[in-house]
Length: 473
Image (cartoon, rainbow, N blue to C red; front, side):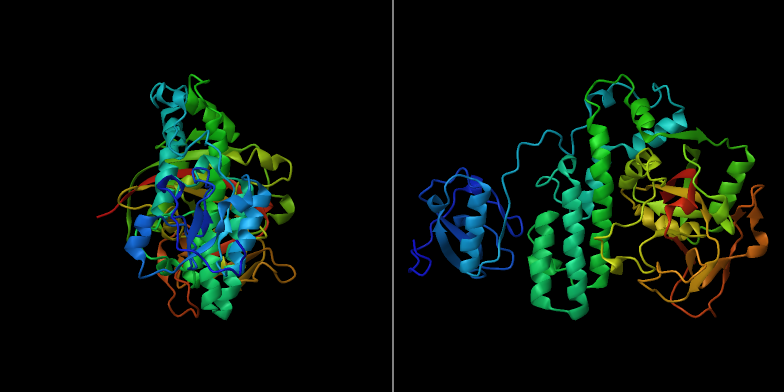
């Protein structure tokens, strides 16, 4: 069929070949070679079947884009040819190769995980409780599903670094378009992002999910960050296929760091409790599990030891296997498990530049646990952070990582700060700002709480893991 020829009436694909995934054509191996392709001429670019067309005929315009037989077997050349033909008809559609049968799906719990309960593991019960929480693959799937991720289309166990990098790269281009506010281009790029990072929108219109504001962009950046941690975590967890009698202990060994329960009657426990209670604003938290975390690396250089503080860092449950297990990989480059956003990530997602963010208020860091009434567990770190000479800012600055000469960190100055006269100084000189919060509303700027940002992970030493169960009244 010549591209300029008059197009015949539509022919429709059989249901097994249909996908409503945004901007994606799945492999059409079930389609007769003489069938022709019917495609929605919209920015979503979805393949539709007759039933879908009858339901939405008033919303879409169908065009025949050519006979499948002209493309031959399903090869890379075939996909390129199809893309060229679609482009010739001004139908912007991204084509992907067939995905092979998944060997490790998101809801595949390693078989041996059911053999041993937390009470039967050789681990200390408190450590076993923590490991079972962060190594729960079902939890990872549930949290990503709440963010709109479509794990049926791309199971978490099949994520790759190239997918994560591509997701960041598309978000970077979206960031540039948000500044210009080119609506048509934002719609197109949003579709491209949802192809790389598949989403499940149910029956809602795609126009409702265009990434067109800094807030929506930040949400997607955080989602890709979480998927990056899960990508590494699922590879570790998939290794356990019934080969270990005590999978919790096996996963603990993979973290390559020591976790030791802090006794409830110890001075350390009292210090952490006071720090948490004094700086936890109006929200309430219940019982918590405190573990001392001993990294195999001691990273803080004596030259950067000035102005060290014990500060909070919160993160999603999905991220902790990745954070803690990558301490092992960091022995090569002398970095901690907390990492700075990659080069390809949009800087607009980080209001004080790409760095590792900390707070002196439990409430501030607890927000980044993203706990809710349905999943009220949260995990935070208390880290020794070598701040050195601080560059104080009252307004966001995406280029704050370009520190002035002599400065080692950034402090975003908030309207609430702990009482410095109540701070505790540990024997090694680390300041714990555990005083009760005071109102500094006279401070200029827009931040409610202080934020501390370092741009070199060698300035961080993880000290305590705090497992919290939040109470929502």
